[in-house]
Image (tube, rainbow, N blue to C red; front, side, top):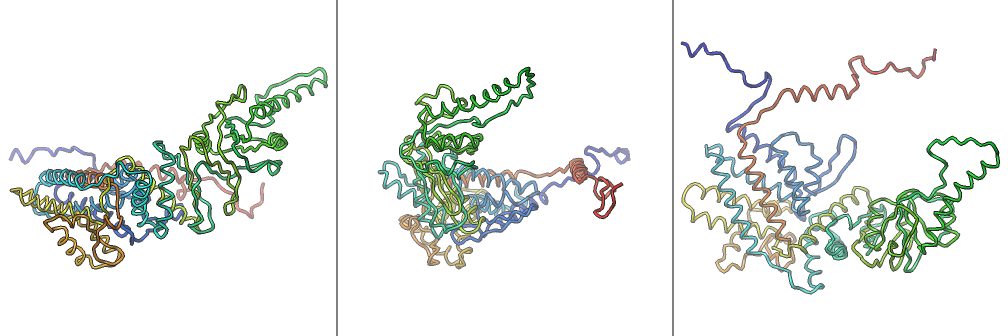
Length: 562
């Protein structure tokens, strides 16, 4: 009786939503599977694109997993983990973002029946981690090194890696054309780690084949004043002066008050201002530079002054373009025109201004240090060019990774099938429940070849059975066999040059397993009610009290002013 009269303990604030136990875990798994289903159809060369229309009316067409995941406004806390792994895969490797989301979703899907049957999640997590380590060791064992090859051989190998990445994108039809362009751009920047040394400029109009690579820097003609047309538009081996100052006639800006007793003294103040600007311009000319670029404005007086002396100038150059010119030409950006010595001037073999579509571009090519390249993209619709830029970013990242970690594995689902076979074989040697869990992990890996078939409209069961038979051959000759997208059968991915850097697969399997284990280890979600009411108040204040009689009394258009 005494125990019944014990007061109820209130631990959490009223209105707190807590859900826990098996039902909570299954609900999280379902949410993640739903997210994976969104990007499922974008995998592979025959993947479909998604059109995402946001609240501001911007339209994005993409089949890049990371881009889609970023643009989906996912609010489910567990499903957000999948967005994070897609972003991390994008920043670390560049490609394989759809793969990583699909794998994580599939690992969870395979774990769901075990959870419903009452298996403790920690047992699943332990087995998944073991399977992940075994898979990564197997990838390293199967990877083929491209180290020690000549530059030409390396170029063709890297171009094949880039072509594999590009085949699943919108610009897949021109993958050979863009793959060689990407490889040249990456080799041009050498060991430079900063990705912004490869500039991508977009010019609407023309077709994809009109895109070109500049071994140097290209940027759009900046705003120009009168006198600009009189300047020469082409130089051979010019000296380049890079500035971060304004070359404009400036009146005294500190609100200075000057009292004059004699009107003739006023003229001397005006002359002083003119002398200051002429002195600056004179020093620029004496430096011997033939091309003057500045991050700030170069006024009409300076433009005409340079035009009279056969010097090309451009003001308001974007900061990143200026830094790329500095890196390529070997110049240094100056914040003063005093004491300009030859060491701070850059140079290049050819500078010219060229018409590209509707725009005019300033192009610096044949730069001595050459640690930069620019790709000028052409295409019909703006969305198309945007997607082409995202695709090239993936390909550039892949080629850089393949150069640094110079090992490749066969693509087209071949490596996934081989690991799946290896794990199934290994599972038979284990006594106990973990045999089942490792088996389910192995089955989940088959999602990649299965989805490749589904997206291309082939019979996935038929193709997978052929692949299983090929990979099960005792001689091991079937290891490089994957899905053949062109015929709907199976083919040797290695001899068909469907390659990807091993780091892509290692990273994808690692990230997907981590995400799956993280979601499996959550057994309770607590939702704080305060955060919801705070959001509501913030939204109401942002609305300015509209709908509650708030806001300012406005005048109607037909009302007379009092």
